[in-house]
View 1: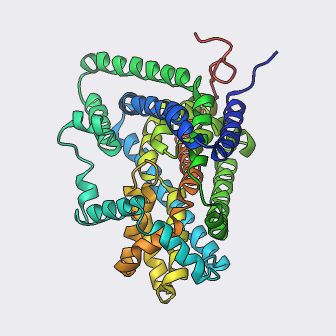
View 2: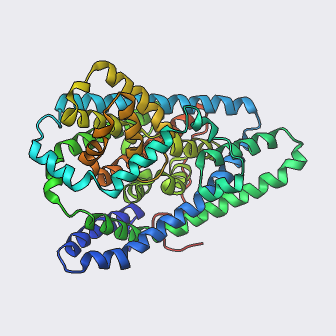
Length: 441
């Protein structure tokens, strides 16, 4: 009897985790049981994925760059990658603003609901933490994101998982390998090639645990929701975000169909395990190893392309986050600062959300930190910021899960398009046990 494919196992784990979370919410001591005895297994899974993210980026990018043999190819691929990422991000922001201005989800919210949300969340530690992080980032100076790309201690960058710094170091090493004698560079290139194979095998082994980890992660998310009334009040806002994200997925599928000549349904099937993990973990960085494995082995993108495009995308390509920032900013203004809803302010939102997406860390809820910067760029009153964040805080985590799916799908789409444009999109070469796990070689 044929075993279930991996994505079906993950879906079953998600559904069971959601039901289990709802059941535990109704039992005395249920929340504590999930927090203490179930959630840690999800955390272990995320830690394992993060454990291999840095060595995977380092090995795949150095090997990919050294395989190009020509520095001019690096420039060409880099410009195409950044160009497509910027274009899709602009499309995402425009889609978000179009939806929120058409539906106006904040226009009909009652003062009673606003006061209830303000009372529950305005002084929440999570809101205060987002405001503090935004303040720290704002006070760092306009060129600080550029400065942060260049590491002073690469081992510190590895320890902190500073992805842009790791990418810079890998590019630096890869280009340097191209410029020295091949006899001297070959041993190091072979080492990183072997390291890349080992790490990819580690991804496959970690994925054996994925369905159980997803169960734990979703159960933990569900028990955090203790006020369904507020969630219902924010339904229109949430639907706007989810609709925008769904349209963005459709846009990606059109690009894949028209330019890469791949079936949209086939494409979704190949990357579905990465999408499901993105939904469960809310982290592009944690999902990166799985995204790379699916794009290389199941879509057919050459390693030298995926090794460059995907790590860069996990850091700078935040289409889902940018779309969310556009909708969230306008929604907040519709509720508590309608006089700020000018055309010029919305143009500023487009520009700031684009720049913020590049600086948005690939970790859970970083988008809300960047939202503060987007709001401040249009002169949003500082005293209203805690209330503004409180309005969307209750539904931020489930929406974060959804927008991470879009971020990861966007990364896979751009990798496919770039590979097609440079003649590096070949036939898929999946391992015969990747989806069915009959045996582990």
